[in-house]
Amino acid sequence: MRKLIPALALMAMSAAAQAQNPVIKTMYTPDPAPYVHGDTCYLFVDHDEDDALYFKMKDWLLFSTTDMVNWTFRGVPVTLETFKWARQGDRAWACQAVEKGGKWYWYVCCNTADGKDALAVAVADRPDGPYKDAIGAPLATGCAFIDPSVFIDDDGRPYLIWGNKGCWYGELNPDMVSFKNGYQEIPGFHDPKCFGPEVTKKNWCKGGVDELMTGYEEGPWLMKRGGTYYLSYPSGGVPEHMAYSTATNINGPWTYQGRIMDEAKNSFTIHGGNVEYKGHSYMFYHNGMAPNGGGFRRSTCVEEFQWTADGKIPFIPFTQEGVKPVGTINPFNRVEGETMADSYGLKCDRLAGYQHYVTNIHNGDWLCVRAVDFGAGISTADKMKAGFLNLKNGKSATVEFHLDRLDGDLLSRVPVSGLESSANIAKAVSGIHNVYILFRGDDGELMDFDCWQITRN
Image 1: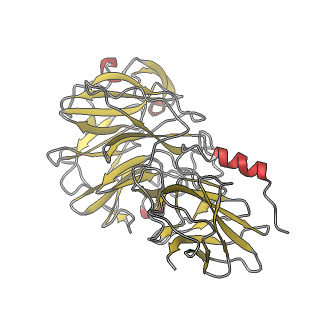
Image 2: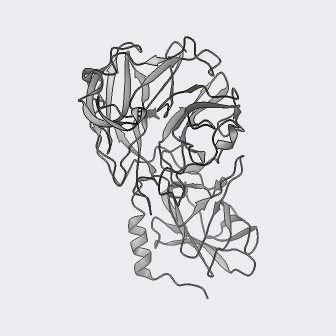
Image 3: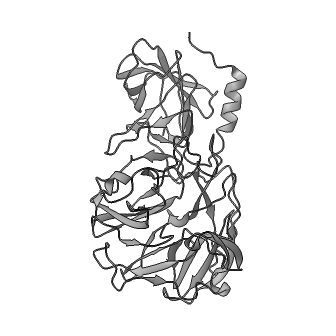
């Protein structure tokens, strides 16, 4: 029997859909590491499992955007199995990636087979892989060697920085997979003038004893603006807030500049970094506010900010609204099903490679694509085409396209009659609109959603 969706329920879901943060709802996406390459902003993240009661993480995910609101799932290019020497199971922790010389280097942290914290690096010819273990062994091992961040200076010299409770760094060789002169703890790390007011924290490298340490906790993010280096990091012990320090030389000395974000909502950790994209400045971080989220099921968020006149990062408040689009979606080209700004009830596949889709589709689930540009307009003579995969035998389903709200004007209603189906446009429309895609059908899982597109008659 087909379930009905009451109008009040649709209105409630539509109101909830106005919130952009967290930016991805199909998977939990902690420790965001954005990277701008050409006209695309890539998002490299870890992956908290849906049933995690502690840190349960098996792989790393990739997303991308060209408008900062619609994120396209690019697959699961790297997993713990990429590193045959690593302990398999649940220690696929924070990461960051960068392109250099036409190669993509994805730095991650995991455990060796005998339980040591380790840094690893995978390499590929394109951001979505395929990746392989670059050296067949750890890049570095040591207690609390987690959260690697990679940075390439103006002169082309690359650096890696990492650590929990301590902060280590080293210049990489041009091969990006070895250190030029080894690595060391950041000079002055134990000075509060460098990394903020001292606080009592548990030092896991000393058996979990309480120890007075500077505010730096973990998750360093290194970048440069003008002649100043900026190092932002989770700070203050647990729960963490975000703070930063600056230096005029990458080797220090570093000067503490203060708090830039409060403790994340529904999460005792916070982790992220900032990028410049299409003339805007963005700070990424995670919280526990996605459905069923929490401290071990965290999700990426993003806020826009303005640098101060004297080159400081301001305090950045959290918002539910997130950021505004800096581009549009062309509905006359194929739009991937896994490109979305918001969703409810849906998942994406967990595959490597370049072909991906939306799955776990049930009656009443939906997704939203923001800033769809219909240009001068479409008419009722045009058609909506949709592609599907893995149809469930005997299941009746339709896909509704609505304008601006989940309960907004019907743009088209496409019956799921095969792997590719189409239907007439129900309402002429022009200009830029949000499009809500609502799945309706019988009980149980209905099918997988591949793509959609408007075709001219």
